[in-house]
Image 1: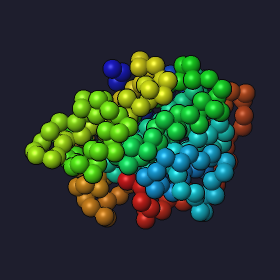
Image 2: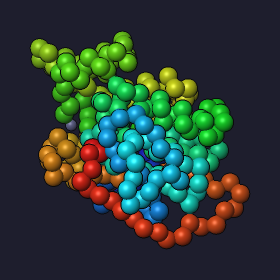
Image 3: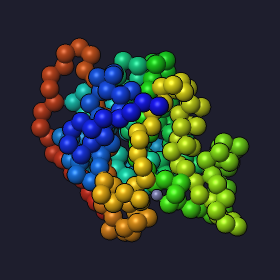
Length: 248
Ligand SMILES: [Zn+2]
C-alpha cells in the first residue's frame, strides 16, 4: 500500500494521483473547496454528469461528476460515505464519485469509471483512489442494506462484512468500492486507499453523519484534470456549497 501525504491545508493527497500531476485532495474538516468546483446535487443514485453541464447555481442530481477541462475541477461531499477520485493514465480526465451503500448497490462506481473511460478513450493505466469513510468499526447494517448489496457483489460482500449480532453486519464500504473499481477494469495495483482511519471515530479530522446526526458538516473532495497542452490558469468564479443536500 502506498502512503498519503498532507499537501494543501486540510486535504489528504495520494501518490497515485500526485504522480500523474493531478491537483486533488480528500478533505478534512478544515478543507476549503477550490474555485470553480463543479459538483452534483447528490442523491445516492448512480447517475454521472459532465462538469461542463453542471449549472453551479442549480446542480443536477447525480453522484459522480467527470471532467476533461482543467478549468473545471470536480468534487463530491461526504460525511461517512466513500469519496472516490479516478483519473485516466494521462491525468487529462478525472471523475469524482460519492458512494454510500445505496449508490454501491446501484453501481455508481462502475458508472463513474465508464464515463471516465468514455472520455479518455482507454482504461489502460487509470488510477482510482478511495478516500476516508466510516469504518467497519462504526458501520453496522441490517438485511435491507445487505440484500441489495449481495445482489451486486455476491461472494465479495462476505469479505467486506462481519456478522455482529443476529441479522446485523459490520460493513466495510471502502472494500466494496475496491471490488467495483477492479471489476470496472482498473488494475489492482492502480487502486489506492488513503490511510484513512474512520470518519465516525475521528472527530478531530472528520465530519460524520452517524456520529453527529442531521447537523453534521460535510467533507469536500476534489480532483482537477491535468492540462496537457499548456492551457491557461482557470479564472475566479462563483463557489456555492449548499450544506442542505442529501449528500453524505
Ligand atoms: Zn469507527
